Image 1: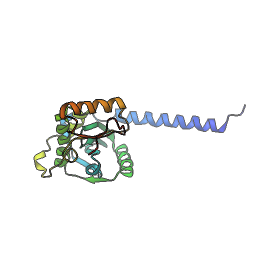
Image 2: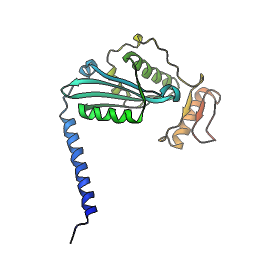
Image 3: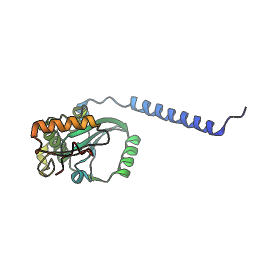
Image 4: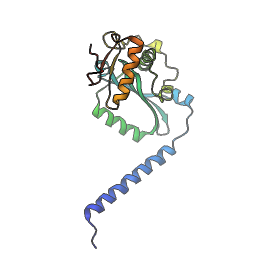
Length: 211
């Protein structure tokens, strides 16, 4: 019985995908086990922010350090400057080819600007402090990702960042924010600030308070 060429092609593609994933795991397993002190002192490679972060209030701050021996350390922070601080965070050790591929893909879908190390740290920490005052802690992986800053001094940044929208917190729901989560956030803001102390945009007319 002849094998359907389409099924064979699909099977080969699936096998190739598994082999690629296995090779990536092996490369990551072979990565040198740098201590956090070593990582935080490694040479800085890139520091970028989404160009629309200040216009839309939401975007990534990305920082990487060159660990040598063909490996990179990378921290990414999804920063909500209007309300929630660091909504997501991740720390990764990548091979240099994987890092280069990731950065190329990222810059293909997002316009970015460079920023000084001190200002990157000041921006991220300022958003976290603003959100904490509202009762919202940063993402669970924030502390791990934050270690990449090492001894960078926020005092070396003379830029003043503004948080909130028109002087008030503004909650804008994301694609992964369920109605229940949106309601929980709105209730917390209402309890802390009162119904006139913030604005919101969730797509739900029963929750939204427009500026």
